[in-house]
Each structure stands twice: as C-alpha cells, then as structure tokens.
Length: 113
Image 1 (cartoon, helix red, strand yellow):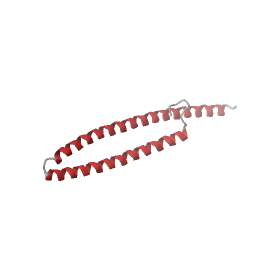
Image 2: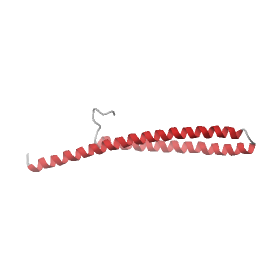
Image 3: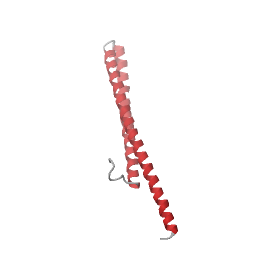
Image 4: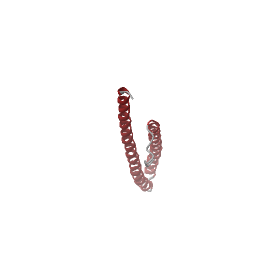
C-alpha cells in the first residue's frame, strides 16, 4: 500500500475511535438523564400525594374552601397531564437520538444493550 493510503487509514481509525468514545459518552449521559427523569418523577409523585392529602383535609372544612380545593385539584390534574406529555416527548427524543447513534456506530456485541 502507498504511504497516502496508510496515512488515510490511520486518520480513519482515529476518527472511528473518537466517534466510539463520543458515542460512549453520549450513552452515559443518556443513562444519567433517564435516572434524573425517574428521580424527578418520583419526587413529583411524592409532592402530589402530599397535595392530594392536603386537598382532602381542606375539603372537610368549608364549602367555599371545597370549591377552591376542587379548582386546585383541577390544576393539579392538568399539570400531571402536561408532565406526562413532556416525559413522553423527552423519552421519544432520547430514543430517536440513541437510534441515530446506533446507526452511526452500532453498540459493541459485549455491551449491556
């Protein structure tokens, strides 16, 4: 082989190595983001459970307060729906990103995926 071909192959090997390292970093960041989304979802559920409990207590007090509690509960359920939509959107985008990355640099056969 000519020196130019050997040099080009060396450059390509370096590029492939850098791409694989970048892909590994992106996969790790993806895993971290998924853990963070789960943690935030768990935290959100705990807060919502507390709010539900408080709303039930408020409902026992006064009819005017009951109406206010119903209004707050309505806002709570709307918020839940918006959050679910946002989580689905994030999940879909992350999945699409991983699929694109897998096309560019498929995972190693020995990896956990």
